Image 1 (spheres, rainbow, N blue to C red):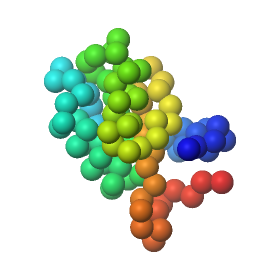
Image 2 (image 1 turned 30 degrees about the horizontal axis):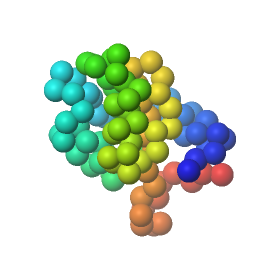
Image 3 (image 1 turned 120 degrees about the horizontal axis):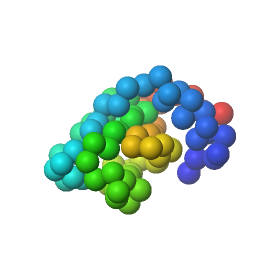
Image 4 (image 1 turned 90 degrees about the horizontal axis):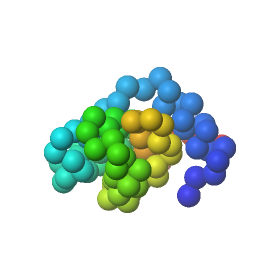
Length: 97
């Protein structure tokens, strides 16, 4: 569980990132969940842009966070920010206070 200070720290780091995963007309199917899981394994901090389903973005963002075993850091407009620490301490690129 992230503290509000850690969430703010991660949101600041994510401000320079471009979205890696996009949720379009197909919805939050297995492919989007797999893409988010792979991106989190590679990067730890990932932006997801909602192109479709903008009305249900809150519910879908929470559902994708649960399915990818990650923390939903922030949902701003049509962009969701996710964080999942790498299990190998040597590969952890983000140090939180």
